View 1: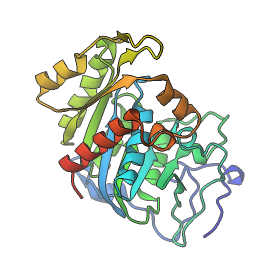
View 2 (view 1 turned 180 degrees about the horizontal axis):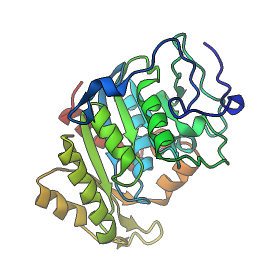
View 3 (view 1 turned 45 degrees about the horizontal axis):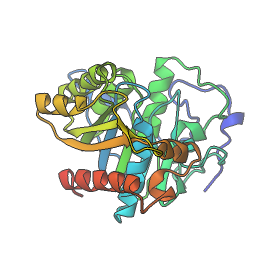
View 4 (view 1 turned 90 degrees about the horizontal axis):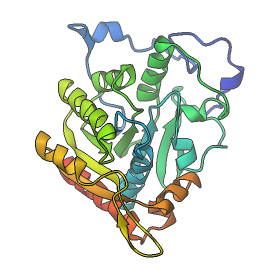
Length: 296
């Protein structure tokens, strides 16, 4: 193993923005082009890849992705999570690794994931100072993403959770067109504004032939901890209606809970912070349902 000196590397090149040393010729995407699109490949060492998408920011997607990866591990699966948001990575914070050292390299110059709570993780957030912005144009972003997808030494996983950034642009298309995704899960609140974008994400996955396993309705109901009154802050049953309209399954309905938010901010997601709670049970049940729909 060797240490990466990302901060002291010479000026980054478009073909190798992460500055990984080369022991041979990097993959040539052009050689795999068919009708203008690259052939999809499996991520090496990973049995199942599950993409978590929302197409809308602020709906709790990354928190659900982190708890889902931890729930897979709790069910006995070898689990990992890849943060594909180059500009706004969340995984280092969610897994309490914001101050971790840069990932080391394997003998064949592949990034070694950082592990916490029994889950392997990789994120752009490990490769740049957490206070620095990534100010890259599209080509650099896409090449960095390709390196995160294909140059990480996962070491054998049953499930790899992809935490996708919001939107349906270059990042999402690059991922869905270059790797074999075994299923996508769409996260949304019941609010019309969030749902309208989430359905666009559903449409995108169908256009690129990625199976959609279902949707998760998040932050639909708030139960007051003092009086137990129930309030539907973002509306109610909006995701259920869209599931029925699009003939897909509602995989989970997760209420709005301040403890889940606090756990995420502290770097101890609910599945590990409160493993016996009803909240953690919701994530475990979600993982179990996804595993049933996409078994290893």
